[in-house]
Image (cartoon, rainbow, N blue to C red; front, side, top):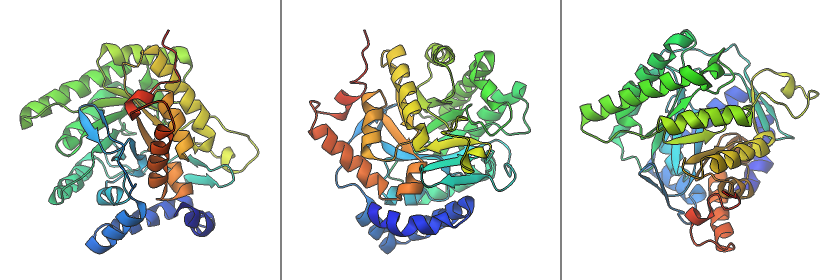
Length: 369
């Protein structure tokens, strides 16, 4: 199916506005997954042949591959992600306040490099409306975990960011399995300042506090909280964040968000402002995953995201320390068949390796001495 997508769909997508093409694809997936017959067809075409189970954060995943934040900002296609065989889905970024995001056009493609540049700016309907949409999803029995990416509202000053994040977490808490604190998007002014020092500590503490309150209210266990970092950090800056994450007992790291770096300054796409993702991010993302695993001695679970376009890319993330994986640009350029290619490909890699389980392979290329 991946070959068919590349031959037919790529040329069609190339002549469409990137954001509109994204919206149409999401709508089609939503419609197809709402009907039992077409849902069955989706599963037959795209669901991996075998599971590759792994447990993280106390949650059992059918396999380690999921959809990254940004693809389903409004939680519109939850059933669709299940239908194409993903191990988990991440909605958002969701902010406390509804916001339109940055001025259009704000999403651009470079098909030759399999790269995206976007400056969306956390466009979303706000946490209250997203919470209502998640509540409606209770009517069907969700088969995979749902994560929520938490962003800061543009109107909220940095000094009040902790309340913004915690409010969104509280509103979504009942219907979300994992929360990701996004302090690394390059498209909200000043947001990346929240990756450092007292800002980050205050956001983490407020979110943890709200997490515990919500758990107590519903008589349930608290939910895992992760931090999503930027690929443009120096190793010393990264280590400062990791020290905070470890001391505040954060559950994991998502590495990485989009980058401000560009492969060149010639192509029109790369002259656009915003974050770059896709194949140009593959190497840098893996480098940071390697460093995180080594620095934390494998104690902090890592979600690898950034330039995963094939099972080879996915395997490199795994052996450098990632235990779960996500893609965004990979689905844009490779289509829904990417799930099956990644999971089946990882299974073959594992069978041809010295490792018996996926757990054994995680971080195997990292020396902890």
